[in-house]
Amino acid sequence: MASLIRLSSKRKPGWAVQFTNSEGERRTIRLGTCGLDLASETKRKIEKLQALKAANEPPDAAIANWLAGLPDMVYDRLARVELVKARESVQLGAWLERYITRRTDLKPATIAKLHQTKDKLLGFLPAITNIRSILPDQAEDWVGYLQKHGLSVASVRHHVRNAKVFFSAAVRCELILRNPFEHLTSASVAAERDRYVTNDEIEKIIAACPNQGWRTLFALARYAGVRVPSESHQLTWDSVDWERGRLLVRSPKTERFDGKDQRLVPIIPSLMRMLQDAFDLAADGETRLVSMSDNNLRRNGRAIIQRAGLVPWGRVFQVLRQSAVSDFREKFPSHAVANWLGHSVAVEDRHYTIVSDHLYNHAAGLSERPNGSEQAAETGNAQRAAKSAAVETGNESQTVENTECSFDEHDTQDQEELILTYKGPVAQRLEQVTHNHLVGGSIPSRPIIDNML
Image 1 (cartoon, helix red, strand yellow):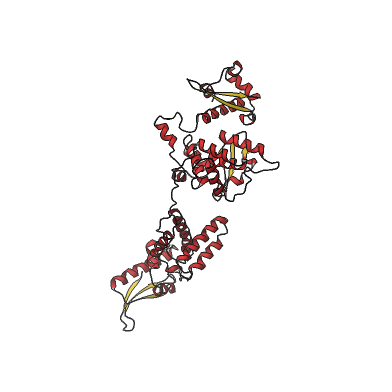
Image 2: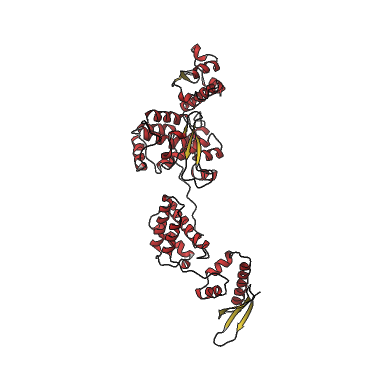
């Protein structure tokens, strides 16, 4: 326990706190001239510091805030009796550079973003500023400075998150006792989800592409939700499981998390046809699905969208990824979609889901299907039927993906029927399963195919 002593000396009037340290030595901390209430409160704080030091515990929030507000003279007196560590004078510019240099575990793109935040901080505060002197109200003024310079809400919050990282590290190193940026809002801004790219639109875009490389890139982003370019440009033909209809995607963005360095994405029929075309047209020895440069993808992508007769949107490939997520979520559980697309369900809910027009139309009874065109749905059923037939023969490798198959549609008064023309063993087995409809000249309608699934 500490004792509060009144100093009666005319030269040094005021109060002092005496206590015995863990070695049994008596220590005295002079408080200077102050009232009894303030002196008593300081004594209680010192007793708390003694208890924390004995338990080898860090200061709690209340003590940390109290210590942070102490002038250097009083704080140094606490440091001399070893209740706290001496304050280290570190300049802002030196600390930011020191932190970034030590983060050798980060990717170059992340390092570049930290440097951008460093420049924003040093544009507002002098590099020689002692980091201990930076107060919460100055952090708020810095946010205003960023907004004044035209940064969006998302950009401001991004820089605030980085600033929190800088100063949280300073707290861990015991250079400061509290993070002056910790109270600022830094949650990422939910993505704008008012743009959904329909199947018809993506087909127009693909048709407007100048070469197969661009067609494959747009298909991967829209049909598989692949991140462009970090994931798309790492895909190789070894990543495609033709038999099981799965795509192995390696993700630099999530590889720092255990078990999240890669994922399997189902290959829907539209994407499978695109990959087959790309494989047939690939040059000898080419191992990559997308071999084009990753420079100017956004600018060139917008030009292709405009060439397709559509109004280009911002965040070209992110919007395609959002549209893919929304399509998957209409048919499959959220945890499966999150696993396929490489994010958490919470992130999916916040950033990726879209309430598209066709959902409104379906709810209002204006469309037969909640998603996609009738042709896409019939095509999917037909391919699944062919694959099921191949599996029944015990030959999984002979699936619709490596069988010649052409599709033609005819409208009747009753329903839309699908004409299928197959060649090879799959057709032979399909004839048996559909009770010789193909042989007899009749057309296997949608109900018959659905019953096969």
